[in-house]
Length: 405
Figure 1 (cartoon, rainbow, N blue to C red):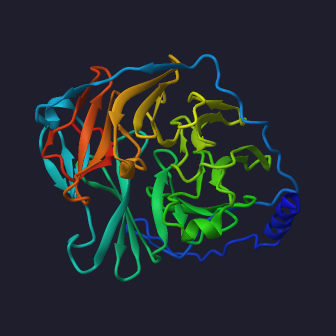
Figure 2 (cartoon, one colour):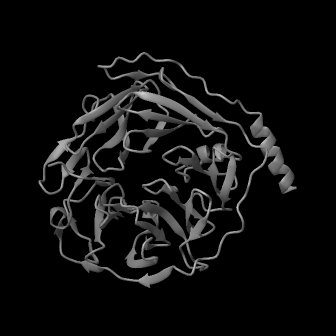
């Protein structure tokens, strides 16, 4: 019966529309462009048809013998600590970009005043892979959205105004292109790819069998739908069984899938785009582009991995296992429990890496006011955690970039 339903789903998806409309927009080389609802005049729509079959991977592999599990508890520094005494770089606090070492704070670029009637929200802060710039979106009451790209002094590098309000969190594919997941994302898994520096745009659309579109859009728990590799040739997506699938869109084959676990954190591609960290089946896997999956947790009944994040150098992966913060080192093969614990409501927040890959920041909700967040800084080289950070409230740890000389 299940097999019959599965085949029926495939037949239905094959009957869906196979193209997204595009509307040309006029761009001026010296002005911030106003983008039409889907793409600019430089748009290219990539379409791959639905395959007639899905090539599934073999059974979930057992943990490999080269994994070493260690408990290496960090020392907790109980004294109040200034952020500048333990780390460096630039980070966002409230609506300011803060150079940690110099103490200088730069107002983020905005359409008029951030507190004006026009601006509803600023969201989707994302640091580029080279940690030299970051992007964020503004939502305006007029129904438009504005993309800003700024450097570590909040100086504008690029700005695009969109005549639409459905763009969601942008993600850098590389240091030049951003992928936007849109409210129109459908069974084709469409994303808008934008180069904010050349103003070039394209809609990428690959039909993904049993993509979990209807349920995901109604859920308040699910925070992701699909994640493309930097070259757009592979995609990890949430299927309608609550599992995760890795698909090669060039060969039209599903290389790997899990039965469940997709709601427990976004898959994250490695900096070189050759592996993806995925949560599924109560396990966290590193999967290469051929579909070979390596589990990195011991087989235990209480394993509950969430929220993986790659270090910028591509050597380590941090993640939560239940309430424990774990770090896996790809070179040594060690999975280390740092004896750092968090409240369940913060476990969807991945640990954020410093630009030099030596430190982590984790969010710590202040119990008296759940809207206030203060960071805990973990220095992996010194094996110490700084818990009481002075002037640390409302730090947006998703932005941690190199400062400018």
